[in-house]
Length: 347
Image (cartoon, rainbow, N blue to C red):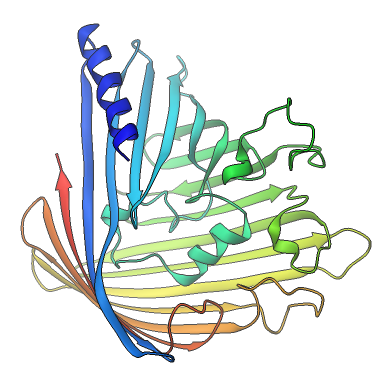
């Protein structure tokens, strides 16, 4: 993490010397959690969940840059590195490593702006299913916003977003030997005002030789699709999102699917306090072929999650969530999880 911070500071100092204005932002999230554990009865403790430091600025009039570093659960990483060019007809062309235009509940929504401490179950599964790294990959994206109401984006990116996501033709034995094309994903979103919105996405990923095969069978491709609807009225909010994924295998092996959704309602008591309730559902049990043994996809799971957010100031937010689950897609904990988050924004 020290090397990443030093790199960001030196880069920003270099641009400041050249007269460019660098914008800084970020946040810190510290957790305290208690969970039901079958082996230990229960476990509790503190977690430095997320630390973000984001730098951005202008290289030219229509050319901007961005670098974001993360420190999640004591693991440092560079999350975003990209250049963005805006053409004369208001098209944005972005190249680098950043969030793919998939589900709205993914990292398209900043972790600092989440209603809950963690993202919905189906969003977490979708990231693993698509073999991405924090919902990100390397690629090129074209996007545009029409009359501040209709947004669209389309991206070509490397089929793997993790450590194997850096394509290097010098490595003949790399995992990209069998990938014959780039993945792609697009989304469209309509917002009649600054809050209410509806959108959908579709993606195709030629994930040959990924770790999702479980039994050693090669994956031919993965198709992903979904939609979201966010509604706000008076002091209430309603959010829902549906996601479907289908994996096709080589050698005429039966396909494997993942389906899931969440529904959430919120009630703002006043300017500082808001209450939420969310229902999560994901299913792989009834639609999983016998040949698939990948550890995450072996069951169905539901979660019931009441939560509360308290905005102490413009920079400090306190959150509390309780989760009761049935089923066992993720073997993280048993039936109960209670956790709190203190977030501080860096401005």
